[in-house]
Length: 422
Ligand code: EPZ
Image (cartoon, rainbow, N blue to C red; front, side):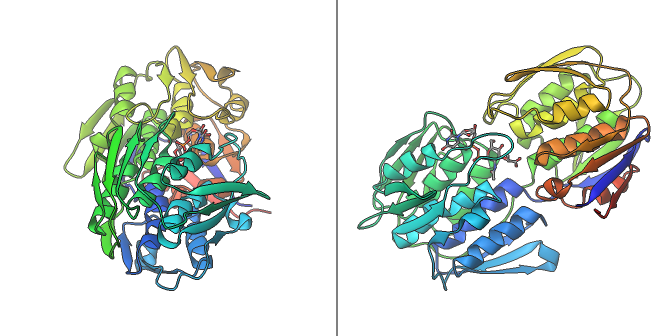
């Protein structure tokens, strides 16, 4: 398994191009199952999760061609010949469950493995199931698989989410596009990736209103056509690289970044005393001199502070002036980066869903272990500011969600290299 070695202490300077959003691409790709015509996605990120979704769709008989070094994908489910998403693939990536809604809508049946837990939590699918049952599906759990049937096809209905689940909103939205009649989704997730999915579905002929708000209304249609769609910028990669100069010092311009994607995050940077400037090409962040101030952070569904930026924010707060309290309200176990940061000299106390971070002057490089995607990158960010060398092991977690992180950070002056695993 590869490791990444970071030598801290070098201020950063330059531009980083932000890729297309992993969490948009992972719901846009299964949308191809809703139509027999080709779906072309541009600005797709080159990530191992995208490869996993490609394998899953191909296992169902769909064709996925990656062009232009993977930045363009042409997908077609004309040759669909299976509606079973196998455990071997689903267990590797929870987002595989996003084939459930489209398969039900297209074929009237689907067998999808439960993803099982992951490092950050149990991650059940009860909200997906109740949403699709509201559209007339009959779903039962047998030997770890959800067996779903929609006799006579899905019918429009009303879905009331107790929690604004991103994935369940995406499954429900895709299923509703081909359901007979009108569907209303209440307490829908409002993430930009949901709006991006709705934009793409509308290009395919879907009739959707209210995406980006808590109430989405869908008029079902008989069939959907093909489309070409550009994947929205990755707001989590954007926030991650905006934090790099805050932690290491210097100035970085994130090309393609838009303030509207990261408003609550930028609000916290302002509270920490960090200035963010909108430029013609994106967002610029500079910190030359005084340390950022401590701030309290609570993760919430969009437009609140994103849980996917919590670990990275914690890395920055480790060397901020003062004490910060982070509250993780989305996942039950998403502080696994904390003990690794403590190995680097951070002062953090975790109690249940709260982590208290007492800022220290400097972190010290150490060998640390990546545990999940966002924890991995938070350790690299911490290494940028640490004295000496930090070796982050098990970086396969990182490759799931970040394109060539060592190249992007190296290009702005970070001393970072990837070493092949033993
Ligand atoms: C999406 O996961 C993202 N993944 C996650 O990003 C992100 O952290 C999460 O949304 C929250 O923003 C993709 O888009 C591929 P949820 P998802 O359903 O859809 C509970 C990353 O790092 N829940 O909004 O799985 C669940 O256990 C990843 O890129 C139920 O209880 O998130 C969790 O505690 C990590 N029942 C909370 O809701 C359900 O049926 C949020 O889950 C579904 C979810």
